[in-house]
Image (tube, rainbow, N blue to C red; front, side, top):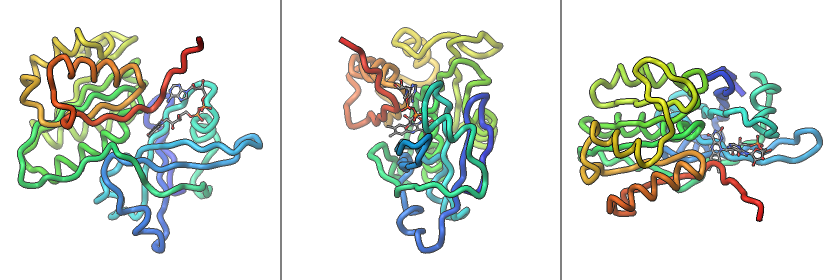
Length: 247
Ligand SMILES: Cc1cc2nc3c(=O)[nH]c(=O)nc-3n(C[C@H](O)[C@H](O)[C@H](O)COP(=O)(O)OP(=O)(O)OC[C@H]3O[C@@H](n4cnc5c(N)ncnc54)[C@H](O)[C@@H]3O)c2cc1C
């Protein structure tokens, strides 16, 4: 492990060095994919998935992979990664996988909209970086729902990217628990989406939708897109956490 950095009040970014022999297996991934970490924590073997935040190009340049881990209260792997690991530690990591992927389409001019909730921003970061570099005239808008600014992972990095890529990249933060200047207060739900989309583009003009976060958010946005008759092939989604309801 190369580095552990705080990227929100309760989240860290962890960078893993990839040995030369493993470059093909670990660094030739597709933007949006995740790795699986495996560790023995308090005597129990735990495995969890974490999305890669860098573009494949950046990972290859750095010969490393970076993930972002939000601390889930009571969660085994996320608490361990947020409080116990340090540079120099060795962790078992399985090669990248996953279907929530962006494949570069260099000759096209597309309008992308991502809707991310909480740690759902992590694969979106990789996808934004890859798409803006691969498609020089495409635009990307990201609706990013968190509790507050302090809870927003990679907030500073996203602001710097929005500045770098103005006017092609726009980040619209939505905070559920903290009112602040210029930031919408609320949850990313159909009513809010109806209001926000007016300032982005007609729904039919959006070429690709990227939805990532907890099940409730992904379901709400998917339902809203279906009501707007958006073809399923334009909608890419990944659920990070399913809420199990007891009968
Ligand atoms: C494809 C995929 C990619 C993922 N990528 C990331 C990522 O990039 N960054 C990231 O931080 N997480 C990511 N996750 C979630 C991650 O894999 C773990 O589920 C999360 O870190 C919690 O693991 P834990 O061992 O700490 O919690 P556990 O010990 O498994 O769970 C403890 C309690 O927390 C609840 N819980 C579990 N997961 C969550 C959650 N995500 N949110 C709220 N409550 C939860 C459980 O229901 C349980 O009650 C991803 C999940 C998937 C399926």
